[in-house]
Image (cartoon, rainbow, N blue to C red; front, top):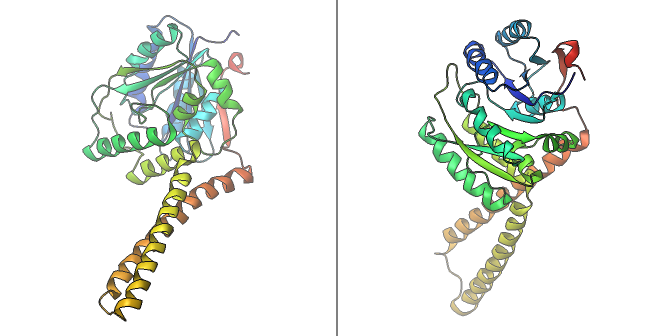
Length: 315
């Protein structure tokens, strides 16, 4: 069977309240494109009825639907990587199952791909997130761009399009933890971005907490740049120089002015400040060492319990 023109990869985790609405809009939008397509749903260890609903949808549209069932929860990005490994399309689009990015806008990304771009990112026209998510996202975007030199206006938007050669290159990577849009951007030769719509979550709750967003950005910065370590090394040199000058100054005061009691709490404050910097540096170093630890164990990224697909769709 010839490869489809388009593959849509959708990770699913506890989205039973959203899936039926997603099916109604997604299949209608893709049918209107008048091109061959397939949809790969990856059930990331959902604890609700998501797996059963996905199975029902597979039996309803088996000619264009494939379902990968994980035997546990491995995270959104590993679910997408599983979808990439099984995708057969010439163009691959990733989409969240929460309907915050309208499936009807997929054609906007495909139009840019037809112009010769090999990576199409997306920018949400009007974000309907809480204020703290918007502020945190902007701050992380600026910090990430300065450290990694990877330009993504809206890194939190998962609706993106990738060419076949980028997906093939990603499939050759064996990293345990990575940020897929940034990884694809680093492989892209001709990237661009488009503005798409953004809606409130159709149902359910967001799976990303503030801690998850912070962890994601730690993975992004430590996975694509050594700048944090280099900056901390430079900071260590400056602190060491400043500490040496302070010691020389205090020694000179003791020689010329004699013993003093008033500076005791100042010394405590300086000591606590230096200890804080040291602990921050140890934590940063631990991030890099932790990534090395995860890689050298060579454990599988994910475990697949079953794949629902037609015989014609099997590789």
